[in-house]
Image (cartoon, rainbow, N blue to C red; front, side, top):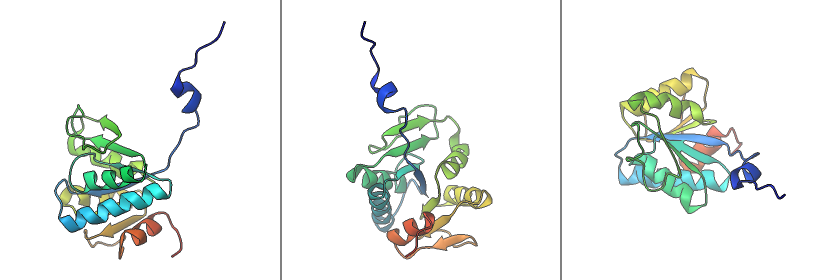
Amino acid sequence: MVQKTHFFQATMKHFRIPLVSVIGGADCTPAEATLATEVGRILARRGYGVVCGGRGGVMAAVCKGANQMGGVTVGLLPRADDSEANDWVQIAIPTGLGEARNALVARAGAGVIAIGGGYGTLSEIALALKWGQRVAGLHTWEIEGVYQAIDPTDAVRFVLAEQA
């Protein structure tokens, strides 16, 4: 008798992709969207997936960029359903936690890249710093502990602890 093996049992057993958290506002400027899209592309080219809040603005732009390069995107959504997920989120996780899901976003990645954003982004930055995460910022809060990157490549290098 031939035993059937499901695709995920056979191929996903050792499947792991390192993630970087990318945070920012659900509304963003065109400049911030451009930065986020490029961050997503760079991370995907380097073999990293993106984890974010899964909605619009910076989150949509980073997912779009990662998708363009064949990268993996994870969205940790605030509601108990995935109706707010942007079109480029591949893995939508409805948390039902509202803004408390910010803690999950900040913790899920190997590091954090903040682009623009308001108080929600600030809360994610604060948690990431408290937990000892490397945090790079692009047009975001200028606070102690956040490396102010000059461009998306610089932000990725810092978060991944790479030499320039």
